[in-house]
Length: 111
Image (cartoon, rainbow, N blue to C red; front, side, top):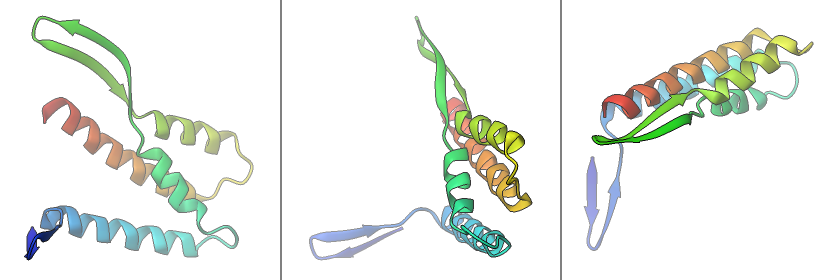
């Protein structure tokens, strides 16, 4: 979506991406209210869980093949399993971040 104002323009993401972002923010705010202290950590767990990185790269005749993994979710998951201050809201936020990471992986391979 693009709104032009003279020489400047505002570019917004597609409508379905905007609606999904609003729903995710609403859910994260609800989960953060369940925590008694350090409510902002839910957002950090979500953001860290969305990180993906390539672990293997090989040049082929058709281009470059890269194997991507959701490294952020793996780190957060192992941290939460070993932590004594494990809260269900933090695990929910990391799983929500994992779903965004899976979406990024699909876009990386297909798109």
